[in-house]
Every structure is written in C-alpha cells, then in structure tokens.
Image 1 (cartoon, rainbow, N blue to C red):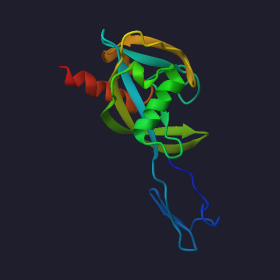
Image 2 (cartoon, rainbow, N blue to C red):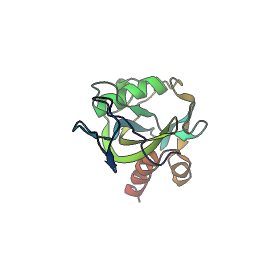
Image 3 (cartoon, rainbow, N blue to C red):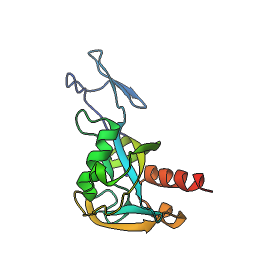
Image 4 (cartoon, one colour):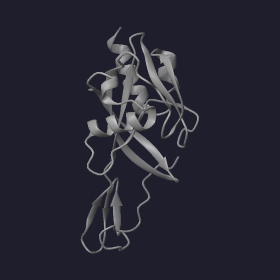
Length: 174
C-alpha cells in the first residue's frame, strides 16, 4: 500500500506544487490545497441472534476478505444517506428492513487506490435487522453471510474502521 498521498499539481491552476507539508500543498500562484479525507459510511447490521451481516469483498482493496457493508459518500450524500444507500447497493436491504441506524463510531482508514494512499474518514452506524430481511449480494459483495459477532469475526474484518466498530460494540457488552 502506498504510504502518502501523491499530489504533484494544483487542481485549481495546474501548476506544479512548490512545497507540501503533511496534507497541505502550496503552488506558486498562491493556492493552498488541503488533502482532506474522503468521507465514507458503513453499517454494522445485527440480527436477534447476535449475528452480523458480513460481506466478502468482490474487489480490491481486500478482495476476498470479510467486510461490513459500506462505501464512499456520493455527491451531496450525508453520512447517514451514504450508509443507507450502500446497504441497499451491497446487500439489497431497504430502511424498512432494519431499525433506525445510530452512530456507533468514526475512524480513519488508509485506502489504496491504484497505488495512491487515500485517507478515508469512516462513520459506522449500527442497526438491528427486522424479521425476514432479504439479503442478496449486490455491488462489491461477492457473498453475504450472517456470522456471530465475536472476537474471531472482529479479527477477520479487512478495514480497521470496521474492526474498531465491531470491537467497540463487543466491548460495550462486556
């Protein structure tokens, strides 16, 4: 995985950057560009038996690894809207299939996109599945499983943000 955002040119004028510090880039025309994190949202959905909805990632990064449903905000999505949209896209669930989502936590992931490290600010929501919620793999989900929410699952989740959220929920129950 790349370890730093590789930005060489000003997105406002196209000039080469003259200096950078961490995630602040300066160009000779006086523009300052901040490489802010990309917003994303996910959801930990749990059934009445303590099992979580887990997808197997269909694409890199983490192809073939376990993940909780989620993804990037699109356009003018709020975090809540992104989480709800991603749940429908990845596991075919609509809001009437689960309780009102509540924010569980936020976390930072480093996302390798074509060799460039993108910082992602991820909000993870929590909701309980309602009876007869129909699961069907959609975008970016090679498969869906209902797995016990336990330490073994936490350790197998690909993204740190998802591990952090699942761990927080587990810790709150102990």
